[in-house]
Image (tube, rainbow, N blue to C red):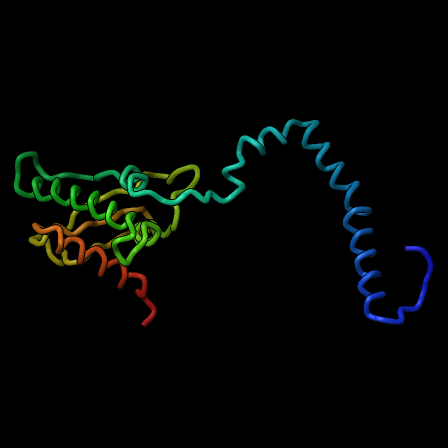
Length: 185
């Protein structure tokens, strides 16, 4: 930066500031960054960083209904051949159909909202969940089963059991929408 001179106008100040920043970024830090980079190459860490790129850079691929469906496992089913089991199978079908409808943008929620309600996360983690999220069922005869509920600590989503898809859809959307305001009142 040479010798000292007096600044007589704002453009000289801007020139001086640009020169100082250039010296600091390109001059002073350049060698340190080069050494850092060479160190990564010498020990082979650069290959690891490239291999783990998805861990360090945000994934921008949109969430799909199939991704959510595949992530969840049905925890327990009722006895084979029972009415409860048939209702649970119907509810699983409703769940799949509803996720497709939400993905298509035809509903007021997004798939991120659904996943956040169930797990507390807007996206599926790169490495997956520590344990697969579970689906359970809320049968009307077992008590309060009008809306879905979730335990985000252990990743359990409990789906209400209905005979009609429209009631299931309404319950899911209301429960998830209203669940976003839980604890704010």
